Every structure is written in C-alpha cells, then in structure tokens.
Amino acid sequence: MKKYIRLYIIFIKYSFMQAMMYKADFMIWSLVTVGWIFLNLLFYQFLYLNVTEIAGWTKPQLLVLLGFYFVIDFFLWGVLWQNMRKIPEIINRGQLDLVLTKPVNTQFLLSFKGIGFDDIHGLLIGLVTIVYALSIGNIKPSVADILLSTAALGVALVYIYAAWFITVCAAFWFDRIENLHLLFPSLRQIWRVPQPFYKGILQKILTFVIPATLVTTVPAQFLLRKPSLPLFITLIIFAVVSLKLSTWVLKVALRHYSGASS
Amino acid sequence: MKDMSVISVRHLKKYYRVHEKEPGLKGSIRSLFTRKYTQVKAVDNIDFTIEEGELVGFIGPNGAGKTTTLKVLSGLLYPTSGEVSVLGFNPWDRKAQFQKQFALVMGQKNQLWWDLPPMETFILNKEIYEVPEDQFKKTLDKLIELLDVKDILKIQVRKLSLGQRMKCELIAALLHNPKVLFLDEPTIGLDVVMQKVMRDFVKQYNRQFKSTIILTSHYMGDVKELCERVIIIDKGKILFDGKLQNVIDRFARNKIITVVFSRDIDQRKLAEFGNIREYQFPRAKINVPRKDVAKLSAKLLSDFPVADLVIEEAPIEAIIREVFTGKMKQTNA
Image (tube, rainbow over all chains, first blue to last red; front, side, top):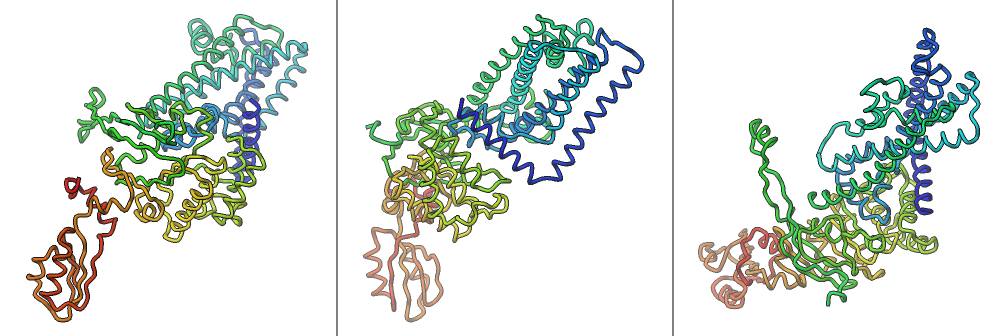
C-alpha cells in the first residue's frame, strides 16, 4: 500500500510538471471549466426565479447537490479521464506489453497514471458552492452529517471509477470503438439533478439498474439532513460489486489479450 | 536439468485464431454474420534451454515467431501448450518476484515519459521496482558511463534523437539489475554509428553484469558481433540452434572462389566449374560446391592463366537468407 501511495504521489508530481509544460493549454481549459460551472449555476438561478421548490428540493438544497456535481466532475475529468482515454490506445498500440511486465498492479497503472489539473478549480468552486448554499439555506449539518456525506461521496466515486473502468475494458475485445471512454461520463447529465426529479419506471432504472442518480443525491442528502438509508445502502452495494467486477473483467480481458494478440 | 537452466522451453506452441475476410463489401457484410477463422501457428513446438550468462541471438524473418516467443517468456502471452520456465517461474503467473528479475526492451515501444526528462522515468522505475537508493545510484552511474548519456538526462525526452532515446530506454529497463534481459529489435531504425554503440553496450553489459540475454534482430550485424549462439526460427519452427560458426558448416553448400586472370578467358569454359556470380575482367567470382573446392581450384590453376586465387566462405547473411528462402533446407540436414 505504501508503495502505491508513493507511486501516486510521483504520478501527481509528473502530471503537474507535464501540465506546466503546456501552460497555454492549461489556461484555456481552466477557463472552459470555470465557464461551464458558471453557466450551470446561472441555469439554476433562472430556474428558481419561477418556482420555490422542485420535487421537494429548494434552491439552496439543489445548489448543494450541484456542488457535489462539480466535485465529482473534477474526479471524472481531472483524476480519471486522462487514464480512461488512454486505455483503448494503450491496448491497440501494444503499449500494454510494457505495463504488464511491471511488478505493479496492472489496474492501478492503467487507472491512475495521469492526473489533469485543468479541472482543479472545479473542485474548489464545488466546495465553495456547497458551503455557500448551506449558508443561504441556513442549513447546519452536524459533524456526523459531514462525515457521512464525505463517506457517501467516497462510495460514489468508487462506483463511478469502477463502472467507467469496466466500460472502457470493452476495448480489449473490439479493435476500435471511437469515444468508448466517453460512454460512461455521458451519464453525468443524469446526476446533475436529484433522484426525486425522476418519476416512475425511469426513477427505478436510474436507481437500481444504473444508479446514476445516487452519486450526487446520497452525499447531498446527508448534508441536507434528510438521509435515505436504503439509497445509501444501494450505492454501497453497487460500489462494492462494481469494484470487484472491474478487477474480474480486467483479469478476463488480460487472459483474452494474452491469448489472442500477437 | 530444467532447474539448472535460466530459461527452459519445452514443446512450446502458440497458435492464434485470426478471422478471414473475403474481399469487397459483400465479404464485409458476410463476415458480420459468419466468420471464417484460420489458425496461425506463430510458434509451433519449439524446445530450447539457455544457461546463465549466455547471450543468444534469435534470428528469423518477419512473422517467424521471434517476438511471440519473447512475449511468452515475459509472461505477456499464454502458450497454447508446452512448458516454459524462466528463472524457475511460470512467466504467465506474472509474479512480482519474477517481474523484478527480468526486463523486456522493445525497439518500437517506449516507456519514457514523453514530456519529461529521462531522469524522471528512472526515478519512477526505481519506485516501481523498489530499488534501494544506493543500488539505484550505483547502477545508474554505471549505465550513464557505459552509454555516455550524462548530458541528456535533463532534456525532455521528446527533444532527444532516436538513438539517445533508445539509450535512455535501455537504462530505464536495466535499473533494477535484471538477471534476464529480452531485447526485441533494439537497434531498429538506428544509424550505423548508434547500432555499433548499442552492440558494444550489450556486449559489455552481458560481461559486467553476467546477465542472460536473448536478442532478436533483423540485422545480422547485431547477431554476428554479439552472439556466439544463435537460434534460427522460421514459420514458428527452430531450424537451427547452435554456434553461429556452425551455421556455415551446416547450411553452406558452396564456397566462393575469387580468381584474378592475367588474360581474358572464355566464360563458357569457366561456367563448367560452377555458378559464376560475377565476371568483370580480370576478376571472377564463382560459387563452387564445398566438397569439390580443392579439386576445382587445382583445375582452375592448371586450365587458366591465373594471377591470383582466393577461397572464401559465403557471407553468413547470404547463407541465412538462403535458409529462409528454403533453398537449402533439405541439404546437410
């Protein structure tokens, strides 16, 4: 474990050094990230000019959720995207061979080698949004609420990582799927709004089949002091199963790769 | 016996299934529904063992099975059947303990971080292989000296030349002092000067670090200069395994007689001696059967006005080329 922490620190350091080599790129994407965040905030401002509540969620409550959406976006684009994008490329260009000879867990090397810093503002703005929304809504979570909310966010991130990794592993079987790595993050539009916004069968599907609605809703619910234990447990089950499944899928994929590639 | 060798391969087979597509749109559509598969025998029942400290050359044309064999030995491919042991491990278990003791360098693939100086990759590999600090320093200094790369360690990798990059790739791969080293086409794309540098390095490294090395190459020069022992492989089968010198004894049917004449002669008469490779007065080169060399050269001296006569072996490149084109497979076998 210690070795992996040390490796991850090196990866962060190197990625930062790389990012600094392309300052213009870094600046432009930072602007884009910040721009998107403000457009999102603006959208909800206008929405709540007309109503005071949607499906039981007030504006401050929704802003808390939106804060989580920004934080998760940082995780998606900053922490994972660089790596997920490269996995199909690594497989198709035969670079996987060099990864496989290393005495380090293959899934770790494939998943966490690169970190993007363009979205780091998203993380900060997300946290600020949460704090701001809590204050305008006069919501005062306890320490336990904050801890549970953080834990729920952690579980959500595990689920997101594992599910994304599994979808990208399709590249082992199919030579070329353009934008395969964008398949999973396209779901993020779903978790931009809380789970109760969806109704009927759609809500059931987005909760118990693809639990996309839960990743922002569950952490937000803890902070907002209206936790739903069944939803939290559902999310935990999905996270654990997906994580297990991701290592299993990689194992099968590597067996396939080792058997078929030349 | 098996435990004595660093590498032992018995009855190794590696077959692939590839699907065949008929030409044209019709073929493409048909292949969506029914796929015809053919079996490619990349490696077809090969055996060999390699002892500690040996430097063995793998030669063969493209698609002969060289890289496939190296990949099986590195644990990247599961064999279809057969037994493989490297340093006492089953390579495809991919145990960290095994991976810390070997290195695979592929001339066409790189592990250096493109946007950072090579030193950063070295430091990363130190962590990956858990090399102790003092050993890392010692090995690095040695490799830097052997490859003469002191000045480029702080330059971004993408700004380095191919040769400089290859040197750094080698260092990155060797920092953990691997006992076994697989070099797949390490000189590919390099100019003659850099090829020579690489060869000298591999030779030195093998001597100083006592590592066991398998080298594959298209360039006979690499193999000729480095390897006492060669394994010639073609279409997945081993055609020859032994001393490079013995390749000549086994496969060369002809010797080359170069004659310098003092007067112009009748070429038709000369053709009776053997196959004339070139004739440009006053010099002629003739391929003659090995067993008849003495007799024929004596006859040449008596029948023609000879000023000079030299008998040579055919160049090893030519012999091996002939082995691959199949002309000589049957003879001397």
